[in-house]
Structure formats: structure tokens, C-alpha cells
Amino acid sequence: MDMLIAAAARALSSGDPLAVLKRVALRNDAPALALRGLAMAQIGDLARARELLKDAARAFGSNEPIARARCMVAEAEIALVSRDLGRSFQTLGAARATLEAGGDQVNAAHAGYLEARQLLLIGRLEDARETLDSIDTDVLPPASRAGCGLVMAGIAMRHIRTGAARAALEQAARAAQDAGISSLEVEVEKARHALEAPAARLVSRDGQHLLQLDEVEVLLASDVFIVDKCRNAVRVGETMISLDRRPVLVALARAFAEAWPDDVSRENLLMRAFGAKHVDDSHRARLRVEIARLRKVIKPVAAVKATSLGFALKPYNARQVAVLAPPVESDHPEVLALLADGEAWSSSALAMALGVSSRTVQRKLEDLALAGKVRSFGRGRACRWILSSVPGFPTSLLLPLAIATG
Figure (cartoon, rainbow, N blue to C red):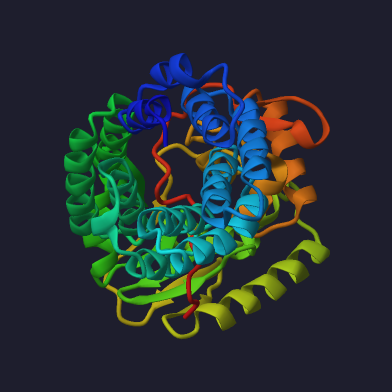
């Protein structure tokens, strides 16, 4: 490694991409191409960065598999930032295996951290935790250790474990300070604000008020019967019954919870669940079908009893009933939650994160665009979506979460 390459590498590790370009901008050998690509990524020109890293991988050739694997890891990180989730998943595993076999434990650990970060994005929290546990974080440079801390904090926040989240953020803050990269310190501080901001609204017949994440954690540990509109589930203590992708059942459960202990009229239920303005026999028949489905689903924790007026919720062991709703409600909150990270997402990446079809996501994006909440740029495969303005609510309870149903 010559002196210019060594100096450029030191500048890159300290977060000074302009110093890198001053040293290697006119060189086209493989190490210089790789460093230029990484510098362009730090500046924000991701398309050019990806081109340079591909050129560097080709220049290294098959005789230098470790160097090629490092380029693949860097390209996968750019794909991750660009929310090109499918491509980054395809390359990281192979690159990490090559680096481990070649003895490059530092870059292999960094590849593992990136895998965990991808898994966190799409809500596979246990897989993300297992991936983090499988890497030796002690060998990582401070910047990557800060990233690991942010991933651990993200996992804890989505599991609603505020103590673990704060501890992880403290580790991330110390690592970011050691790295001396101001943008990384800002990212950690942003995560701290998200942890301390209102995370949900508690709604009951007595009114509503905002809750922070630690208050949500206390509530979920209690014996309150909760209709969780953030995660589309019914909760009582450690029991959680998912109602995901069953919006009618969520609407019915919420109507019952907001009226508890009173009953809810059939007309009110039809309006809340189906938007019916005029009630006829077909509506009543449909309501009976959906009530029967709700009874079956929540049978382990509650019953739905018919009354002279309509129906009423009868929890078995809970003394209180409440609704846990987002701080600000809107259409398609799960899409807005993902876009709130400030990155530009493709519809295919959103579909992968949410576990739905691309066409479903496209319809949601079109609705949000008509409402002026999101906007797009680019065409075809280059089309990306961003928020039109800063969101008015935190998103940790609305992000994807793969959960076991009870």
C-alpha cells in the first residue's frame, strides 16, 4: 500500500471524504477506485459510489477475493442506504463468508452488522439479534460499534424494552464520540429523541392522553385489556392476539374498547367497521359474520355478548379496557413510519419490509401522494418515494415487527 492510499484510508476512517478525493481522485488503480467510491458514498453521491466500487471489484479480479469481498460489502451498504434491500441481501452473505475464510475479521464483523441492520428494517428482530450475537463487536472500529448500538436500540424499542434501548444508545453515543464523526453523533441523538418522544395515545371512555415508550411498556405489562391499533392486535399481559390484515376486526374491537363497559349499537358498529350510512339486511348479516369471526379470534381472552342494543365486550380477567393508538392517526401509517427515516424508498423495498405485494404498496403510495403526504422522483426502477414534510409523530410502534400470534 503506497503512502497516498494509506493517507486516504486514514482520512476515510475519520470521516473526511474530501481529503480522500484530494489524494486519489485522479487515480484509476483498484485501491484508489475503492477509496473514491467510499468517499463518494460519504458525500452522498450513491449512484457514482456504486459505479466506482463495481469498477474496483473488477479491477481487483478473481486473484484478490478478499479485496473484492470488501468492495461487495461497501456496495451492499450503499444498497442498504438506498433501500435496495433485495440486492444487498443477495451479496452480503457471500462477502461475509469470504472475509471470514480469509481472516479479515473486522470487515466480516462489519458485514454481519449490516445484515442485522437489514433484518431490523424489515422487522425480523430475532434474526437481527442472532446476527449481532454472532459477530465479535470488539474488533469493529468505533463507527461500526456505534451502528451496532443503534441496531440494538432499534430492536429493543420495537420490543418495547426501554431500559435495554437506553443502555444500547449510551453505548452508541460513546462509540460515536470515539469515532469523532459528527453525523454519527447526530444520528444517535436523533434516536434518543425518538425514545423520549410520545409513542402512542391511550384512549378510553374517560378520555385520551399521550404516552412515552416507557409508559407503554408499563401498560403492556399490566392486566389491562388493550386493543393495540399500532400493531393491530389485542393484548392482555403477555398474551397478544394478532389482528394484522383484518381491519374490520380491528375496527370492531376498537369500538367495543372505547365504549366499555357499555355496549355498542349495531348502527354504530356498522358505521365504524364498514362505513355504512344506511343499514339494511345485508349489512346486518355481514356484521353477524364479522362478530362471529372476532369472537373466535379473541376467545382466549374475552367474549363478545349480544345485548338488546347491539354487542358488548366482556374481558375475562381484565378490570380495565383501553385502546393504544398512534399519537397522530392517518391513512397507511406503516408506510409513513418507514419513510420517516428520511431515506428515499422504492415501492419494492417498502413491499419487502411490510411483507405485502408491490401493487398493494403502490396503491397506498398513490393514496398518500393524493393527500400530499408523500412525493416521488425518478421513473421506472429508479422511482423513489419520500415524505413531503417532517412527520408529526414518532414511529417505533408502527414499524414492521414479525410477531408470534397467540
